[in-house]
Image (tube, rainbow, N blue to C red; front, side, top):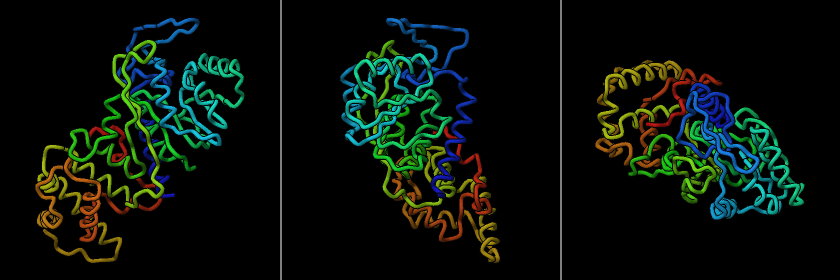
Length: 354
């Protein structure tokens, strides 16, 4: 329940950011992930009887080899319900319906809804349900496997919406802009290792399927894409996410600086001192005089992380560091908000660029 509360808050904050950055335009089938909509410019591509608008990122995946790799990575069983986000004209859908018990496709463009239905019925398949709507705005149905093509504007909110899904699923095969996928996949000691990769790994494992070149789409976008596979953890890592993300945010605020230089700043020490007094009050303790900066540096020394940079610290080491701080009464966000849903919105900004 606590996990779902946190993830639902993440989705809400991400959707707020999405509303600020894009207008209410069709976005599924947007493999042109790196391009923001351009004002007063209309570029359309006509293919057969279908018109695709490049300015809103309508690029249909056409490469049969890539489509087959998505299906192979999904490992669909005959008893599965597959959720497909953004079927477009149905190039992937017609590969899913023969394998699954049921395919549920979510599509925002009514023209695509008609086209994917027509193609599947023409092939004799009746196990397809198409829902017209915005996947960020509706409750996702139960499913075993999810496939999706996502524009960069909604990558973060959709990932966390997927992880907040209340029903268990086996895996998700997702197409992202290559830059976002690399941040999602980044490991310790890699330059793109940061809050996005670390926080995602609290709830799931992520692996690379393949890169996708612009020529695999019609019309071709101006950026490369990448397909990743997400598998939920059977038991998510147990941690107070308020505390965890507050500490991680500080540690990755300047990737090239050591943890010592980041955690000893006056602004951080002031926060920790305030939170220490709150912790004492909540636990009916009298605050003791604490040389907070010295205590922080001693804890860093005891964990061997004093001169380490955040990109060199593993998730396990961050856990040990947070545990060491909490044992000494040091907390990175105020504990007064931990009752119910008093989650500070500033902790859940979904840019994850740090």
